[in-house]
Length: 173
Image (cartoon, rainbow, N blue to C red):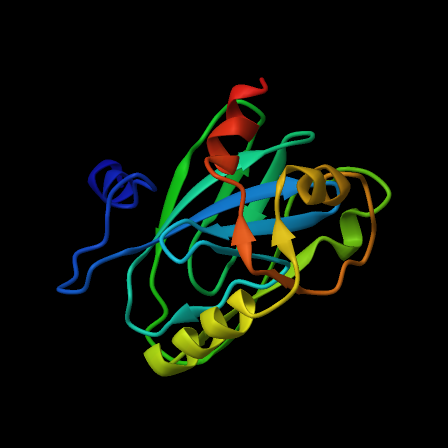
């Protein structure tokens, strides 16, 4: 049990011949923000990923402590203001994988869900192109509005992300 438990270390990268994709995750009241720093786009309550690509998640909170839970693809890990734990996952097959908050965090907790949609590399590239062509930049003003508590948020994509937004969120605390 001791050895097996340490093999499941959330900080341990997955072995793969493919370059990992980095996604920064921010829990807010009551929604999930996914920042794709290499693609310079972001989304709320939707996490598109390519099948067979290792995903390296960095997670934090810009609200209360929360819990990222994506049971079909990874484990559960807490998000906390001022901290940045990691989690690694990979989708071996295409599909929609439901994620949620596993930590009761107030009125909107029940609607704090997201979908990790695993598809082809081409499909992911098309999603990035679509996000970039949207009229929603995630600048600091848009982020300030997004960070306000709101419930049952529909997925939305952002065409760009304020420089160093994730680190700015962590450093607030």
